[in-house]
Image (cartoon, rainbow, N blue to C red; front, side, top):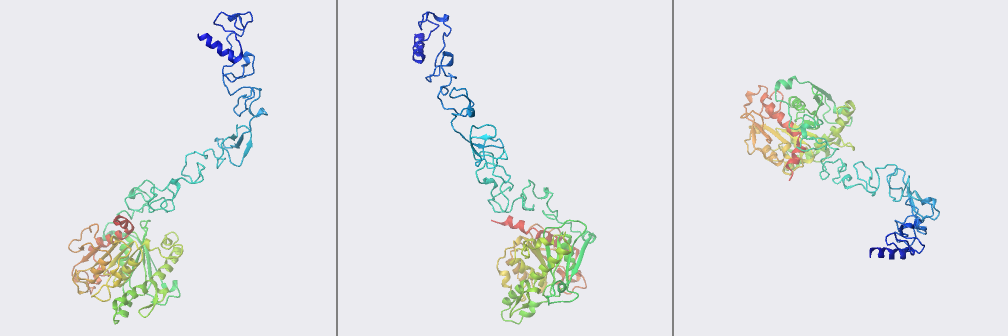
Length: 530
């Protein structure tokens, strides 16, 4: 039965064929089975209607029904039409559009087209957006190299700058947080700010004066350290300056010279009404690692003298603070713009940038020659401290150290300036005073009310009751020692907090703590954010 089926199939394919299994002369040529030379040849095994060449036909590949005479000649390195010619050698080849593939990645350039079979240097698929680089082609893995690796016309989501900090996601370790990227400096925040895989002190790029580091509070060490100090006449730096052009009213600038490294922040110190600087305070600030500037400005009790006889003393005080900071000529206070704190500091910073190009004073000005208050710690004593408190309220300073300040000209009221919340985090604003200062007893001191308005809500730490290390988080510091125990040159409790002849060694730990921690304002703002 099996032989019968095969026999019938062969009849259909190519007529009678001698079978080698039945002992019969199937094709009638007088030969039986294996006596037939063509015994067992299947004429059309692929059933494409064409007899194989072995059976006397023209089908050059009887195993593939697509190959036979008259078939379309394709670009496949086969003789599809059995005419003895392959691919481009066959004039009857089906036209194929191919694209130049110079880099050999299997994808061609859209603008390099030809009608021919693909081969070396040619590809059937277009879309290669860079035919000089085999790693760039449709379907390639998108890399963080600023190139369109997969030729989709767009950077991958990982290369987009989702947080808008200028650093794409490939290198930005947190593209949802604009404060973290390779463009940022490592800070003492407990996280990898600069995206180098290292955190805080473990990162060698971190300034050693940060990350809770503070020099030991040793008076002998402070005295043994070496410093550079210089003075500049504000009236010589800017001839348009008109106020306090006196030989002893000079800006002072200084920094430590025995370390060779400084904090990122600038310490701006404002003197009291008499215009003489607190040399001890400035030295302690420089010892803590700051580039330090003592700025002479239009002070000398100008607010008190102008406002004390006016009916609305508080309003006058606020006008006075503004005038000292930015300059103002009004019915309250008259200070030309060139004599303002802001303008005098701009002039001085530009001058220091020229005089000391490697000291980095230019980082405290932006491209528009405006002060970068977000890189400055401001401090001051007495009326200078009051102006420092005003600055830390209206500008984004890193922090502030207020010595016997702030205080309204009236002992009975807190200036409205201090009654509004400011942008500077309270955790980086510090203050100190004598408990008997201005003949007041806390908790009703105007300074304490001002401190509270500035966001300083921690308990008061009495330096004399516990001269040990100031606990972390303490912002308000008091001393209660009798004035006679400090120096016979001191005549008031007010002087005992910052006057050079009145300061005691016991104050050093507290003051270094305040100056060191005031430089961490940007960090504690993040930590206290909801």
